[in-house]
Amino acid sequence: MKNIFDFFATGFAISLLPAHILKGHKNTGAGFLGTLLAVPLAVFFMPYFWIWQTIFVLLFILFAVWITSKTSFEGHDSPKIVIDEIAGYFAAVAFLPRTVEIIIAAFILFRIFDWLKPFFIKRLDNIKSAWGVVLDDVASGFLANIILQIIFLIL
Image (cartoon, rainbow, N blue to C red; front, side, top):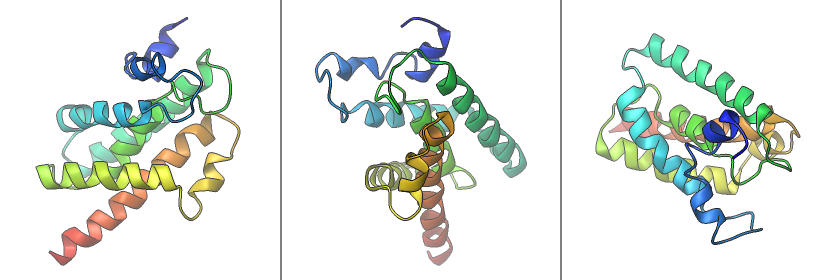
């Protein structure tokens, strides 16, 4: 890591763990680890009151875009960058109760949508800037959130 931006972008260096094993591959598992890191961060640091959650998530998205734009990693959407997965998971669990079932369901749905990139999400991923790196994950998170909100209302 060359600077503090790289440290934050890599999820405190968590994304560098699989990179040593699977050098050169796009699917290193780093996104999974980044999302796994996001779980305790969301549980322990995300505020409970909806207005504070809104501010927290929006500020974190802006922070993630800023950090991503300052990293030293080459190429668009380097697998070493996982701060976008953290922002996406925050979007997935926002405004929902923090039960074990919701936390796990949000994790699974977010990872599925981040991998498949359905609907308009692939278009966001194709934006060749820090915004594109972060917004496709945030959109995947919001899609997971919408589905969980609907399920939560039905049950």
